[in-house]
Amino acid sequence: MLIATTYNRWPGVGASILLGCLLFVAMAPCQAQNLVPNPSFEQIDSCPVFPALTGFQPGAIPDHWFSFNDTPDYFNACVDTVSSVPSNVFGYQEAFDGQAYVGMATFLPGEYREMVGAELLLPMLIGETYYASFYVNAAHGGIQPFDIGSSNIGMLFTMNPYEWVFDMPGYGLRNYSQVYSASVITDTLGWTLVSGSFVADSAYRYLVIGNHFQNALTDTAFIGPSPWDIYYGWAYSLVDQVCVSTSTQGCPLANLVLELSGAVGGIFPNPVKDQLHARFGEKVIGDIRVVDLLGRSVRVEKVVGVENITLSVVGWAKGQYVLEWFGKAGKRSFKFVIVE
Image (tube, rainbow, N blue to C red):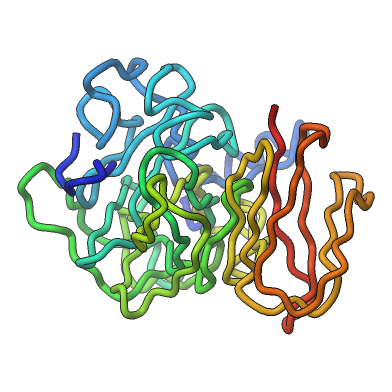
């Protein structure tokens, strides 16, 4: 977690699995094993208490996980503080699964990064194909000044752990990870699935989540102004439901990124009460349309060639909506929520 003025801050799974499948085949189909312990970050020894609320400090770390670089953060609905769920210092976001998730800085000046890691339940087998996935949300709307989304958020697999503590050197950027999002994550409301597969060339034991690429190799997109209306160029990402498996049925999969909303623009504030500002990142070719969750048109704006718009939602029913338009790459959309 960052304070605004400083960076210093508070199957090969063996014969036993196969045998288990055979023994219980009459009762239920065998499910592929997720090699990630505590994949949704729900398990923790006890609910975090002040002052150990952010920064993966002792007492605020999910079981089996640790910091691979600097001070990522842990969020759980069991607390009512800056690290709660859904409302916390970085905005308002429900967990994808359960009541917890982790967060980390994924793009800042000076190649600054935060990363989380864990030891796999079993080492990988050389030559085996592995499938991996996790869900990402672009944090925005809190008191922290994050105003962009970034690409390259991914999973790096390694042989050795690097348990970062204060004053240790950084883990370093490899400009490589086995699974990552080549597209910029801009969805501040929903969760974007990032997934992929690879053949293990080593007996990897640890996974590291974060942006492992230098700034010059990372794409970014504006998602909304910082709390002080100053463009900082900082990105912070929330992560939930991590999965690694030897089976295509073991993890949710997509073509690297699924249901990525928007182009290179963004909407803010989100959730919204009165006025919604949309920046499309391209010229709109057709009408702009708002639909509800049933696909019914709520409003149509007869505009062509604009790159941004301000939309009044005063008097609209609270709930989730989708803002749709057509750009040069086809139909695009942003999801947003209206609150009272």
